[in-house]
Picture (tube, rainbow, N blue to C red):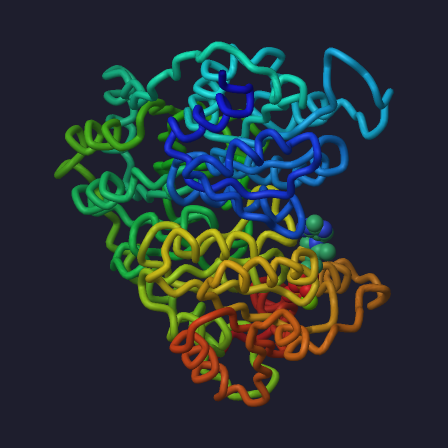
Length: 548
Ligand SMILES: Cc1ncc(C[n+]2csc(CCOP(=O)(O)OP(=O)(O)O)c2C)c(N)n1
Ligand SMILES: [Mg+2]
């Protein structure tokens, strides 16, 4: 007779799961034993947080939930930042945590916290499994809920007595594809009229436009309508940045060069914008009209309150919208001049030779060694703004960054997941010296798994972004610097290869050589953050003369 844990593992196999990430505890041992007899691989990580970041990234990149596992109390709580990352980032994920027996209490309250209650605000659904018979339906429901728009994490708690209890075989529930309704004709007609009446329409591609299934429909919409577009940080690459309609990326909320295009527009078709992102522009009473196109309705915010909505499956809804507007649009030729101006500003100082290198130079050099389908995974720090602003993406989900929870520590785990899923593509993690150290122990996991992966650490011996904000807000420079390990030796101690860049011109050949080799490589380079204030504050506020 199968045990609860056998049914759980069979139900996961039924969903196509091939790996589970995590750190088991004694309450998960029945599940570990059922995994041993299954096709699913158990991938141990060195911290539960990393397991959750990896599982979430699996969901983000494939549309199918990644699965992670932990013990009760302390292990489960270590998953919570990953839960929030997936929840805000709309990444489908399943978290399975153990619990002490629920029929008896032989250890009183040892290690027991109310994990379900702690997960509720961080997930789409959090449930305790109280009987083995319910497992097939609960697991099917969990996957459905996690994948359904807007995707996100689901938490299941499996107490050890339920996991170990034998039961009659319960049939599994076959998964089926979920189709979403398409936007209603009245909404499409209303929006089409507004768009055709506009003199200077512009498209914005938001986080939702990076869903794996939208690649073709979005490109087709832009091709058919020829409306210039810009993107949010998490919408990068959903239509190629090589297109002559690409106006830039909104890494700041206002005042950047790309906002010249936003200010010029009288209507913005906002596709897949998710207000979890730091605002890509600020709506006000006099700004452009906004038509929101999304899988779900936008929340009404002080800074985002669309005038019309096209809600439904985005791909087919956009095709119906294009049918209504193709060939009937005003495209303002001034956008093309604005585009050259914006993009040339962005290229400024990318060629500079000084050492330590500027952020612009580092972004340019990384782009040089990454093929179009190469994946750059950012941790969270000052360089994120530079990569979002300056790195041109040609394929969706090739610059993975977190502009939702914006947590530190996800750079390395997300890159590891990308390297597992796409072993033939180049994968580069770019981390600050602060963020890298929050999950650097996963170097061991990466080496153990035999991944081919390059990690670039940008060293400023500081929590640079906060230090920059401190300066922008006119506080004295105080309290935000630290010392670092010798990263080359640190890498070697894990069995990885370490490199230190000592000349700006060595950056490209060092990254290139690391990719040509196999295994895990760590490259550390100092970064000159003087540019943060010079460009992102003074130049944009017109306080320094603009370069000729
Ligand atoms: C888990 C977490 N803790 C704190 C912060 C606040 N925070 C944002 S950026 C940053 C500094 C990042 O430092 P580092 O990784 O060295 O990158 P740098 O900005 O120096 O390039 C901090 C502390 C955060 N976003 N996430
Ligand atoms: Mg730093």
